[in-house]
Amino acid sequence: MTEQVPTRELYDLARRVGLEAAAYVRSARPAGRVDVASTKSSDTDVVTEIDEACERLIRERIFAARPDDGFVGEEGDDVIGSTGVDWVVDPIDGTVNFVYGIPMYAVSIAARHDGEIVVGHVVNIASGAEWGAVAGEGAWCHEGDDRRVLAAPTVARLSHALVATGFNYVPEVRAKQAAAMARFIPQVRDIRRIGSAALDLCALAEGQFDAYVEQGLKPWDLAAGGLVAREAGIVLSGLDGGPDERLVMGAHPAIAEEYFALVRACGF
Image (cartoon, rainbow, N blue to C red):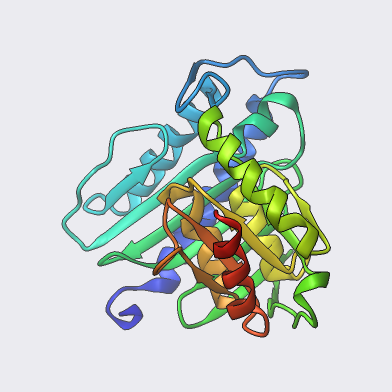
């Protein structure tokens, strides 16, 4: 698959556009809280004008370089391309953090070929930290002009696992997730709720977390960060197959089977 498309070229484009988009958001964000332009799944699931402008910037740059590709973005209409390559983009993953000024929000850009993610790039807008991956070629953290290869560390025991998670913005769904979490949390070290799925998955690849669970992720939430995690050695799964909107679980192979069984048993 990856031999049929210029993955290095796609990655370079994703990174170049991602860094420009992150610089735009940093310069455009005012001091204090950011005004909300609209909402999505509930009145607490927000969109800002800067989200929308950032996605327009990303679209323009990608189509200037590759006008026949497709595009799937959080804030705009999908574009069907003719090359087999689609760009899956979240202009600001962690918008609520962005609104409040919590420095954990990211630009996430991935390219998929014939439905499979082949490159991904994530940049923390506030800090400038960035991660990347190419399918079959590994994952890394950029450190200036250098790359530090990521290999998720082994976890000794599930009971000592620090788990990243998130919660849905729809109150009824959130209530069910809270009940499942109440059963789950006594059986692990602790949980962390950062507020950006892309950054959670990159942190999992780094070893800052031992495992991950979340429901309700859209393709743009999962695409780039999910590839970084997988290429670092993390196993990702859904409830009864691959990771999807219903459920995303991630863990090191040493505990993956046991961890996935625990998540299912808790009722996520």
